[in-house]
Image (cartoon, rainbow over all chains, first blue to last red; front, side):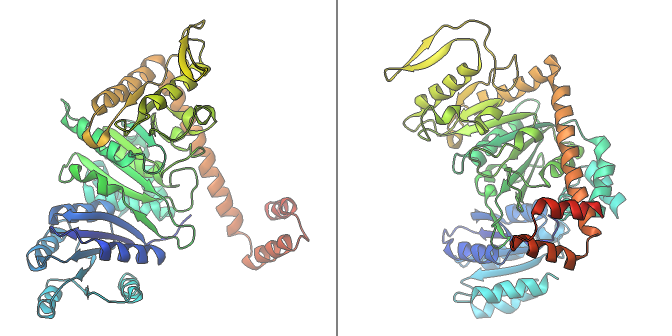
Length: 131
Length: 336
């Protein structure tokens, strides 16, 4: 009846429709006992920040394969901050070149997981960061 | 901290609403204090339940209904609580109802909250009714409550909502399915969704026949394979209460067809409840059911709090070995 669950928003910003990775992660987090709010493809930064606010999530996970991450992720981070969600853990996956990783970490995206990352690693990362 | 949260909810601040619902979902003394403070501010919203089998289009219908109420003049603000099932194995859940509600993004008159059922079997979560109170206190005019995909027995929604919409789809079963007990009995309104599929008219007729069996009015019967209408005696009556016969609407929620009519009927049902005096009766039933549920949980909590876990484990072991029956064991626990 009474137990704290980790709530995670999984969203795909941008226009690519490749949602298999996002679904695999959603399923793995579910199997790890987390509550996953899955919003699907073609989410605008505004939609992601709004959903994170309304759902009061601990974690926002974004997957993007179109190459638009350097344009879209900063917007999401700004909007999360504007909504007072500074304490939310943000992680990202998809096709993200190594040279972009430092800049993404700089803007507050704490976990970046490329293709082939074992799902256990992501589960453990989230569990460690969300007390 | 709690006072600030309560003030935030009453002022309609979205972050406060979201935090308060989380607090309630995770339970505890703080949540009860917040609910106690919010309770005097509840009771204004009209609560609409939307239930039906998995894949019948409940989320799409909720999306279309909310859009309709927002575009009406004057627009009504809409809170949405959408429940999806928790895995009985991992305790996790995938809450996917927002996928169908993207039309509602960016509207400050809308608040959507997804909720996992967390082990409750009646189609809602334990916390659903209390989450609805938060949205009610925050000033939303209408609150749409979407249940988990429900089969025949998930009828908690009827005790939570003022108006229950049961969503059916063509091709789910014959007219015997329609007279079975359970979910069809709790409907104040029916939506036969995906009505562009074959069999929609038959689904409507099967529902109509079920309603006719409840009433003394005209009867629709299946005679030598043909549906026929025969005259009956008295005034037609509805499934739930006298004076309201649940209307049946054909909808195609993805194209918003039939949605305006359904939305109109929801408001008509509210007016009926107010004029007939049945609203007060429903509120009293709701209060009784809620008090009973809280008493059950609280009693359990108290018994477990004063029971030594080792003793409890021992009793469970003895029951499993058939040395003790569960009735005697529970009497022992309660008697101490």
